[in-house]
Image 1 (cartoon, rainbow, N blue to C red):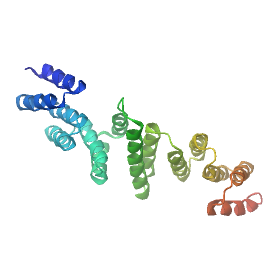
Image 2 (image 1 turned 90 degrees about the vertical axis):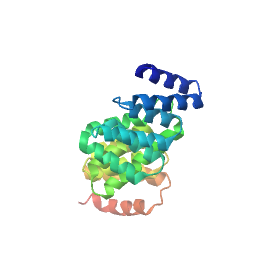
Image 3 (image 1 turned 180 degrees about the horizontal axis):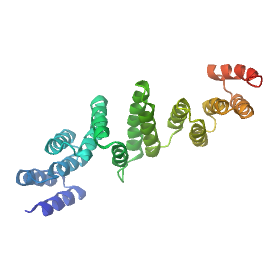
Length: 243
């Protein structure tokens, strides 16, 4: 069977749910077409769809060995490792992609995260994985990379937690206006969360907008905010107008 017909048959068998025949056909074709460019990536994708994760990872590795600049196979391997809970190794692969392809790697990684038909549970898990990478990057002092991961997490699942994190991150980089935009998105998702108002107050203060900062703190207090941060900010607010 020629290469293209083999790929089409494997894909068709997977779509109709004939797992046993699909695996048998996949293995038989691999023995014949192992020299073909892209064969290992194709095999890895099929194994991953069938739930055979270790075989998928093996073929992604084979694809990278055959072509060390195969960014897509590196990325897919990183995503698969994340799903298997191997976050450190996944992060190492992503960093290798970034060295090879710069921002293009980030874009491609994001596309790999959003395959059609994924469940909300899968998207939430992937968003959490991206946030772990964002937090790790921030701890290492790489705020730009942390922002990229956080923005990718927002694109996968837009949640108030991610929006608050992104707001803090943007403010830390001196981007108070952009931070306020992120906080407003988060507030719409979780209107009763006073943390958005407290951080918004810091943003307004950074912009020299004392009245808006005080208004934000008042809204937080009306929401029943009793956090330590809120109390400190409200005490500081008394001195803002004099400074």
